[in-house]
Image (cartoon, rainbow, N blue to C red; front, side, top):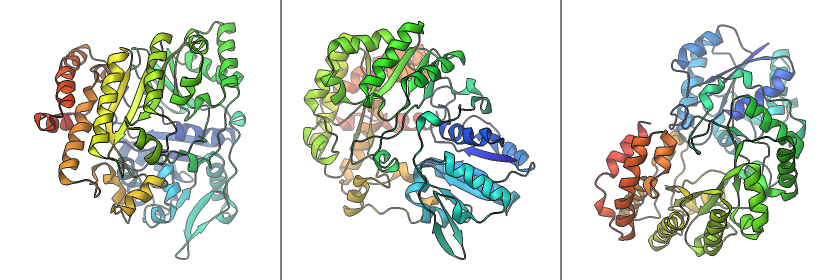
Length: 482
């Protein structure tokens, strides 16, 4: 038996820069491989002629084709793949999974190129679905799916959440691992690992809590350690722990550190972390993390306004905490990577400018600090801010294909001038600290030019001279070409 899985392009797909492991499909494959089912993964981001690869795979008559997609550009390329499948093999079931189909299954199924939707975590549901399809069984007994029959949508009982410690080994042999090493963190060859799932916080802009039913499931320290060692054996010099809330259990992290010390494993580690966690940790714990290999934390700062953080985003942190944490991490030698976004419903231009000022200050106070650009808010289905955006005039697409242009929406709660200013801010703040662009592209020349350009960017932003960025359009074009 054979299954074909396709990972669509995202729009930011430069090889070894933005192309991290397609872990959603690798993880889904683990249950199939354990059951003795052959799997082929075609990643549009790295396969130059993916259409030919799909056509050749279809000649082998797979049981079904699975496509993973998030809201946005991935839908466009996922539909390109689904339509190709339907053109060649009209009766072959096409199964969609991922965050977007999970939240909007009925609308997804209205597209003629989609036959079945797998909800939430797809490992067990998709494996059960493949077995049912191979036997010609009725799909009503497969938990965690939706499908069309007799002109109506049928949704089965929810699948139980998985125990992270019971997963089969991830079948990395199914993908070309060399295509997924990135070097933007200290120049080290990095691979991503996600040992945990879920978040217990209730940020209004994030779909993760509802996707994972507001539960956090962690992998025990010995298994996390073994997975890190496996990454090292595959050639990783740094492991990017992409769990939404890796530090939910401090005791688990302490145990992991002790194992790293005891076994003498030397590897860089980066993990997502919450500002309020770091704020309450003693300096000794941070230093222990640094000795164990933690060189960077991904921190969701999000805004420079306390009102926005508390009232709009429900983030549960304050600007004062962010500033304290920045200095604590400086002393510990752990680089903070801050994320920000602007344009959410109810945020004022003055509060956006407070966010600009905070991002500038963090980088000045801590030379190790890195920031994302101030990304424009996206009303992601399944979040509370999505509902607020709709209440303020945002009209969601009424079909699956319409979500492909998600990144170019207009914001009815913003004036025409604010829309223009915010788009300028979004692109020029890629250079707010002058280092991250050169590091991401692994180019010394671009790094030098970025550092020089960042000085004028910071000056103009601090003076609120948004009309002094005639190059913003060119920067946007160059970004789209990466």
